[in-house]
Length: 383
Image (cartoon, rainbow, N blue to C red; front, side, top):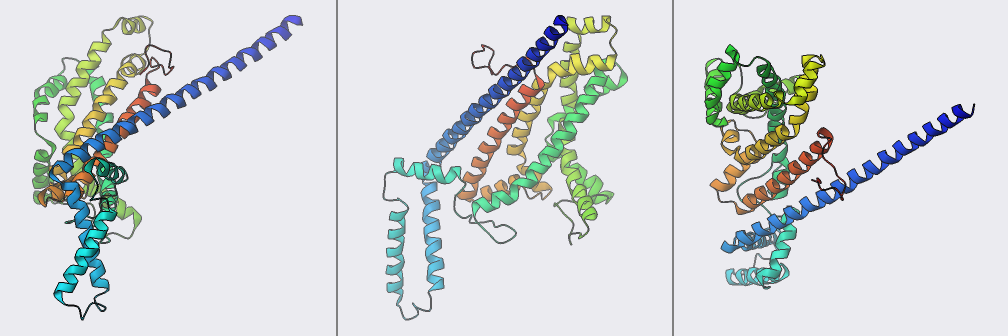
C-alpha cells in the first residue's frame, strides 16, 4: 500500500515537472520571438532611414512635400473660386505664394535636413508618402498608402501560390529521384536543369502564345474576366484561370534546377550513418525518407525557398507587366516609367517590410521544424 501511494505521488511530481518545463519553454519561445521581432523592426527602421537619406540627396523627398503642398493649394483655390472671382492674377499669385510659404514652414521645410529626415522617416514607416502623380486605385484614390494596399494582395496571392505548388512538387519528386538515382527520369531532370537559366517572363511569353493565342484555353492576362462573374463559384474559377499562367511561368522557370539541387541535397543526407542504422533496424523506406532524410533538411530547404520568394517579389516587374497582373511589380514599372518618386519610395519601404516578415517567419519555422535550435538566452547555440 505504501509503495502504491509513493508511486502515485511520484507520478504527480513528474506531471507537475512536465507542466513546469512546458510553461518555461513557452515563455522562452515568446520572449525570444518578441525580441527577434523587435530587432527586425529596428533593422527595417534603419534601412528606411538610409533610404530617406539617399533619396533626399537629389531632393526627391522635398519635391514630394512641395508637390503635396501645391496640390492642396490648387484644391483650395478650386473650392473657393467663387470668392476669388474678382481677384486679379497678381492677387491670386500672391495669395498662393503666401499659402505655400506658410504651409512649407508648417511642414518644416525651413528647418535643417537632419531634423526633417526624422519627420520623413516617420512618414515613410507609416507609408504616409502623400499622393502619387501617375496612378490611382480603382476607386480613384491616389494616396500611396491606398495604392500599395490595393496592389499588395495580388502579388502575395501570386507568389504564395507559386511557393506552395513548387515546394510540394519539388519535395515529392526530389525524394523519388533519391530512391531512383540513375534512372531515365533522373537523367531527364539533369538534362533539363540548364533550362532554368531563362527568367519567368520568358516562359510567360511562350505560354501566352500557346495557351492563349493558339489554343484559346486561358486568358492573355489580367486578374478577372470582364464582366466580373456574380456567382462565387464562377468568380473563383475565373480567378484561377487568370492565375494559372503566371504561376506556371514561375514554376517552370525554377522547376528542374530546384529538383536537381534538392535531389543532390537529399542524396548527401541519405548516406549518413543514422540513415543506414535506420535501414538496418528494418524501418520502412517511407519512414526513413520522412523522418531521417526530409526532416533534417527542411530548415535549409525552406530558407532557399523563402530567399527565392524575396527575389521574386523584387524581380516580378516584367512578369506582372506581361500578364497585366495588378500587383506591386506592375506598380513599380509604371512608377519608374513616369518617375513617380512617391510610389518608388513607397515600394522600397513595403519591400523592406516584406523582407522582415519573411525572415521572422523563417525563424518561426526553424523553431518548429528543427528541435536542435535552442531559444534559451544562456545557450551558446542560440539563433
